[in-house]
Picture 1 (cartoon, one colour):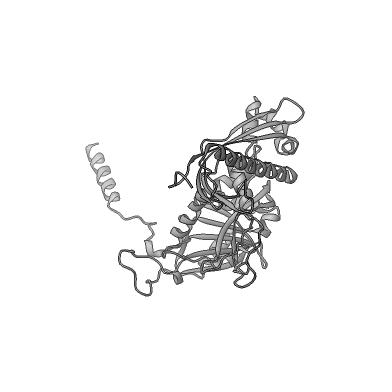
Picture 2: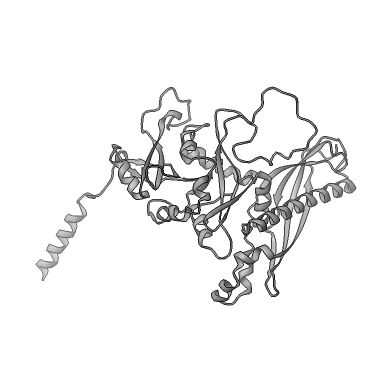
Length: 413
């Protein structure tokens, strides 16, 4: 017995000294950073992947900047394949290293695919694949995902993954696009409470930026009325994230511009902060800039007792005064109240227009169903109520509470 125990211990010790037979060296694999999905031409899928070439950085690096990949050291490859996994195997036969998706942060679906009603069939295998994280970010691309990925290059710094992470964070500081992960999007596709949404990415070719011509007239613009790819700007970075894609189940049915996206995030309780430009209530030809923040989560109450749902939405905001072109002393209580009332009405009107748009498209992108479900005792009762079709008949009242807390670095104009 003693000999058997000793023999077993020696065997276990010997096994602990062996190397991992299935280990992968770090330079034996390719870390994919972005995945693009289009409808294929030669086959069902057009799969595009982007990854670093693992070459030495060309040119000199600034002191303290650290090592990384230069702008030219990312590449894309595309393939038409019958499935996502077949595409991976087919690509691996032409690449000297094995593809690995553990660090993929960006998943792009073309607008054509999103509008086809087939996106659930395309996202299901990606969602099941254990190498892809549920925290990956999902976008709908204006045009083809393949074309956008060719323009996807690090613009500031030299790491593509870092550039996109920081760009996505700007959504929380502007409110012009939502933050949607693979988990969020997949849950929305099968939810009986609400419909899925996704941020929109596009290539801006600079055609909306008019270099020469007559100066802008007196027409007031907020800056958020543009759609993705049409912002009047120019520069080396052609990628922009702007607006929201609206879905009914697995079909994209509409698009929100920057302003509408802000109102959507305000209603959903996902708006953090953003600068708003509004017309001066006393001199409409001039503008006032405000720094707006959500003071608390919106208050939402939904009752489903009658023939149609009744929804009460109360949005709670704080703001700082940033700039007053007219020079009117809005720090005074009577003027301050006038400005607060004007902004309350702007936000109220914007949210109400957004709600009507969502009703026309029959999509509850505002998460009201998450509150309506609390009125039902069983899942069967809730599913029989069929919220996603009843939402368009809902009676919705919007209220906005807003107060200017600070006046910037000036106590008086």
